[in-house]
Image (cartoon, rainbow, N blue to C red; front, side, top):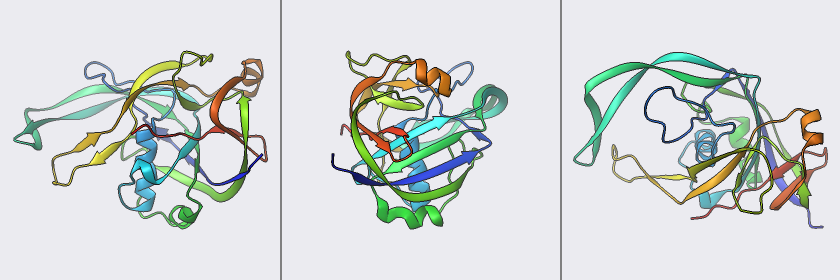
Amino acid sequence: MTMKTLLQVSFQGWTATPRMPFILSGNAVCMPTPSYSLLLGLVGCCVGRPVEPEEVRIGFRYAYDATAVDIETRHRLVKDGGKIKSHSKGTDAYSREFHVNPKLTLWLDKVDWLGYFKKPVGAPALGRSQDLMKILSVEEVQVTPIEEARINGTLLPFTGQLNSAGQLVQLVEAYRENEDVGTGRTATASRIFLAIPFMSEEEERASAPIAFPNLYQTANQQVLYLHDWQL
């Protein structure tokens, strides 16, 4: 089998907020895993510029200790004449769910970006600006393609043949920054994904292996899915 060299980056933080999309009222809740658009933003923060999805393929494994809820102030915004501005109704308070002690491992097919994670341009965060993530390590690793594996703590494009427990969610894969300042972003393709939550070793052994494209395994038996963008 042909081996591939990837960049492996390990992060750890106090809190993370991989928010469930399209929930606009009541409590803000979290997905079991980050979305690929959120991870692309995390990478772009370290690189110091918006990173386009065509530039890099991403694989990840995500875990956290617990879920908690806090009260926050929400700033309402409105689009007026193509520009984003504050809403006339001002702010309000609402409850927001977050993850405690998140741990994230990223695999990127850009080994020449190692320096950006040794000395990131920005402060990486997973969700809100206060959800800061510390980079524990960054290294090049060799991975081997495999046909099936027990996998969790990741996000897979959903197909009818995908036989695994998780949460179905429709997500935009990535966003592109508009050229005019203040006009926001433009979404790329929207797809249905299966968010597979992190499992303990015992739960993982009891789960069924799945066959899926772009599965790889590291030398220390970590399994990852390397995502192909649909643009």
